[in-house]
Length: 445
Image 1 (cartoon, rainbow, N blue to C red):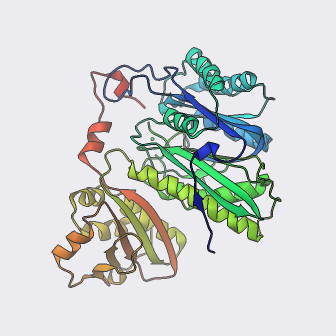
Image 2: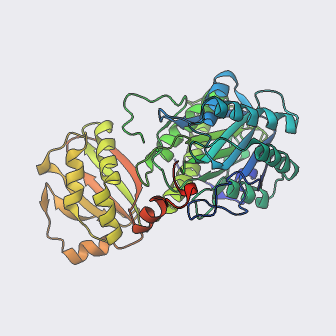
């Protein structure tokens, strides 16, 4: 389906009836070392709908999950509506026990009281250091300050985007406009994430039996707003599909955070008629939401800690979707493969090795491996049916030299396929994450 999307300014405040703001309230308070992010960086954001909005969400399936995730899951089970999300950076509020749960609950209740909202209308997200209790005096002061500076301009969205960043070096925002049932509808989104990135989110945070990964400082958070009118079950179905093909398809380092969260608020102020899942309107909305989520997800990989190259790993011809996924993740997360990408080395030996030790059913004599430019139809094959092709080393080096390229793997055993958006592994990543024993702020979570 051909969807006409118009890129517009404002990200999360582009849809009608949404406000945002970000403030500095010194939540980090973690010293001055290289891992501390110390300084007057914005660290608390509010995203507000002027009217109650339908809400849907997906959350980390890490068995060690943070208090904010637990609070959101609890609230979404009871309520279909929300009106505000309060988000902080600098402290994950993870592994903080009963105090952490009390603090997360106070964050939502204090936000509701500050904005004059009824109980149950606030949700919460946190990112930062693990195992440190929240400085609640600072948090309360930040919520009050953010409530005073809420606005609808792109600058307000910018401040909210900055306030949720940790090791990110670039803000990640998008907004689009399109027609839905004859009405002009907008979807806006912001996200953050640069390290500890391999989300595997589900609507309840419960881990499906088939989910192939788990793991543990940076976190992936995404917040989406829309003025479309959408029933909760329809919104949840659309978000689940969009995340499955975007945020759940990225990896920087193969680690899943304790705090990964994606929330979408739909306030209905665009005035379109609500629609069913099996409708043409749903397909239009789904396509727009897919675009927003995938663009945000790719921004995370491009801004990954120390990342120099971004590689789209495409696996085709697998017996099952699970096989395709297993092979793609094995290659995308292989330290040897990722370091070869960084060096510009077209080392297919490391790639086929990773395919071989994955959980996928493979036959060595049927595996093809090749490279292309992003979106290009022409593929330079380095391996066909398990054997090297006549492609020269110079040609292969040229294929993997760009900052972004695609790796094609065909198992030639079936019709299933999978994709992963991955990154190289660099000296900068190691230097950033190795910690400094002279600075406690760079250690721990």
